[in-house]
Image 1 (cartoon, rainbow, N blue to C red):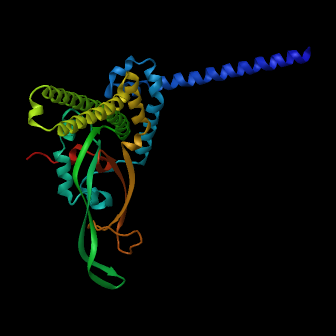
Image 2 (cartoon, rainbow, N blue to C red):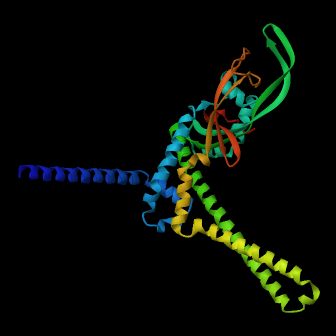
Image 3 (cartoon, rainbow, N blue to C red):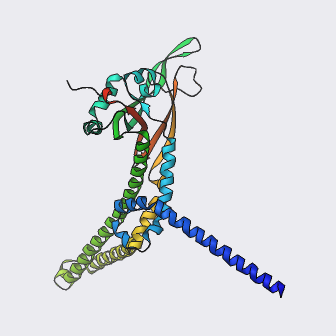
Length: 339
């Protein structure tokens, strides 16, 4: 009897532990949903708002949104602290010196940025923090170099330069800038999901139109066969053309069935969004890039004895475009004054 009671108590304890574990998991899940609520809603707004009609859409997206946010956080961790942009920095900071050919180019970048001008015009406080984007170019040239004590001429060199400077997303602190970038990267991924959905829609529409045209051609061809066409063409030629049209129509209908599958229901739309957010590295790639450059922008090998500076850069790669990115800060007084 005692052993039976002990067994029963053991079973009850097990059930209680299981229930408590389940409740704890459910509580953690609900906390995640609350914590990620705003991010999930931003994703839905930027991609396909109609998926709110899907039951438990937030729960179905929470893992993917969390994956995307973790990825953006890792990207931001790779970005070094904001560097100072001013005339003195150009002469003493090797990275600023490499980014701009001279002080005038640096000042022009600050002066020509509408976003920066608008930031200060609307009462933005100094210093301003922003993301600096640039295109890195490498070109082949020939020059001289010291090999020990010997001057060697006509040596093939790689000249590195940075152009198309762009200052974006100005704000009042580095913390706010990083938070803004995290949100913008999430929305970027959501819009890539929307682009994927639009591509599928376009493909489906193109196939539907192609099917309509083939059906019309086949009807017209068969209609002509009831008229005078047999007097004007050979029977074998007509059969070959009819067979070719029928085969093209059959293939188009098969392609259309396949094209409709990814977007049959709103659940399918949600799945397309989830797939993109679950694989953020496929749509937004960020690579550390280390360069060793002379003061004149000549690329050096890591083991070169020539004097140079090692730059640790970040390269963004998306939509077939590459950009060097850096966080920067500057004061309103660093902007050139009109006149």
